[in-house]
Length: 326
Image 1 (cartoon, rainbow, N blue to C red):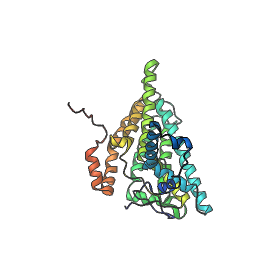
Image 2: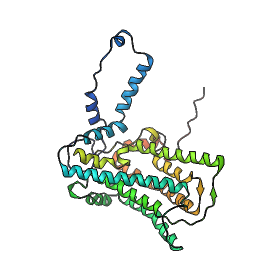
Image 3: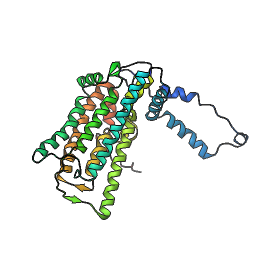
Image 4: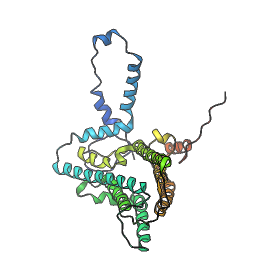
């Protein structure tokens, strides 16, 4: 898959990008500024000198540049009422389902899956809950295969299925997670419920795990992780361009920060039940094993570059670097 800028295309899948392409072109038009008489008479202070490089680094950060460039292009869409309407509808459905799924996950796990809408009678609830656990990782991984990608490209109406594939994928994943946490049938057994200082400490850890997951998702490419890449590209009538191989932020410390952060959310809850334990064990195993498939795809796509990254950065646990002896 070759690199390229965001360019005109009605459909098609993306490629690892030159993330600064469109954004840098837009920023070039804002390069000029006016200097007051006081500015001309007095050299900039240290704070001003520090802010300028910081602003430049922020503007050139590919995690931000690619997303802002795509949003800017989508805000000035070429004509095509049907295409624009489809993009907006799919985007709205995707982000609404995404928000509901995240809220359902946070709330359901906070209570150890002891509160949910599922009412399947026991012992059939065991089978129903097992199916809910299994359906997400199975479909999530299957849709990332070649046949799965071709299926995604056929799900959206009209000729834009390939362009919308990432949005369709995020929509399906969100609906799967929403089903898991909303339709779970609780066992009614509560083993332990934190209170007092322990509750505050565990709740802080739970919130920290979710913030870590948010940061890892941003470092991996917010437009892909949220599903925005597909519908924004369709709005702008450009080819979806995937972010480059993530190596910044948390990806400097470990290769799989998203999976590690998600696993942390499973184990930092203030209420423990058999339900939560079953979910935590099942999905922690998934978080440890599934990235192996992802790394095969990265090895095929990025070749020697990924092999160097894999040799330098640990899989899931950061290395402890001892200071050099003086």
